[in-house]
Every structure is written in structure tokens, then in C-alpha cells.
Length: 247
Image 1 (cartoon, rainbow, N blue to C red):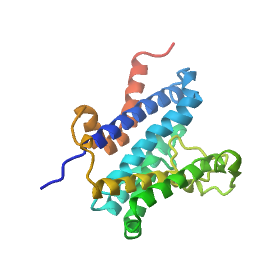
Image 2: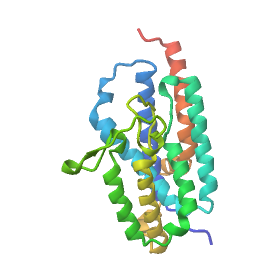
Image 3: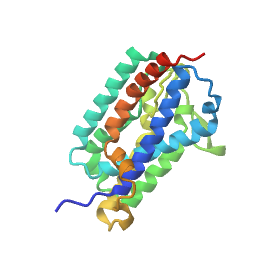
């Protein structure tokens, strides 16, 4: 008998994808079409809300990876799509180039977990969950140039230009979508160990009922929606402003 689908995971992932679609749409309107929406640069949006929604998406992806029978194959596919997005943005919209975005992160995370699963599966889910949670907190600001929090903060910078996938960008580095392995691979692993709990224990019943089918549909098709939404929106924006030029 096929396992019941946990629609709550689709719902949460679908909502986070929709939030990212809205964010990327506004981002394109400002940086490609020069709309003067200065509120978009607020610290609350860029430093809190956007990482929160992306973190939920990565967390759910980690949970779902626990149920995948071919994590490495899926990871290679997702990474290839991420590389394709890098190529397309470099050619079509160089101002919005993606050097190491969320698809690169998810693809490599799936591959790493697929390779390391014999080792990861030996770790009790609580131990793994809290270990990677602590690592995520410690390394969260590594891309900003420091480790730790508060009085324990330690600065760590590099001038080497090719360490940005690890969370060590140079001051000149730019990517319109940037989710390096450190710290976000740790968030993926947190999700994987939550998935281990869901897999081994009796899952809460609230995970199963369908609540908002349209958003759950987005969650089930999140990969392709994430890949296609930017070119579709940019094309529609170009058409709109061609018909209704800004004065």
C-alpha cells in the first residue's frame, strides 16, 4: 500500500515558494525596470523575511530527501538545473546573475546526503538535529564575514575568489540568489533528521489532511515553478512596460 501523502509539507513548501516568487518579481521590477520602491531595501525584508522563507523551503527539502530513493540522481538533476540558471542569467540578465543559488545548494546537499547516508543514518535523530542546529547558528553569518554571536563573534574573511560556494565570498562577489553550503547545508541536514523522526515515529495526524489544494499543488511542483517563474515574469514585465511605458 502506498504511503499517505503529508499534505502539510506541500502546503508549507508551496507557501514559501509563493513568497519567493513575489520577492523575485519585486526584485526584478526594481533592478531591471527601475521602479523606486525603496521599502524593498529594508533590513526586515532582506535580513529576516527572505532568509526565513528560504530556510523553510530548504528545511522541507531536507525532510523530503529522507523519503527519496535516489537522492544522488535527483541532486545531479537539480544541480544541473541550477547551473543552467547560472548560464541563462549570465547571458540574458547579467545584472541578476545567479552564481550559487538555492538550486545549487539543494542539488549538492542531496548529493552529499546520498553519499553520506550510511554514516548519517547511524546518528540518532535528536543528536543529528541538535548538532546541525548548533552548527547552523554558529556559522549563520559566515557569508557576512564572521562566526558566532554576540561576544563570541570572530571575523573570518578571504580574498580567494572561488570559495563562495562554501560561504566565503570576497567583497567583490555578487549573486542575485546566494545560498552557500555553509550555513545552509546544515539547515538541509536539520530537515533530514526531522524526516528521520517522521519516518521512524508515528507522524502527527495534522500532517496528512489537505487544507489549501492550490498551494499544496505549488508545493508538489515547486522545482519547476522555481525554475520557470523568473523568465516568465520578466517576459511579462517587458511586455507590460512595452505596452504601458513608464513616464
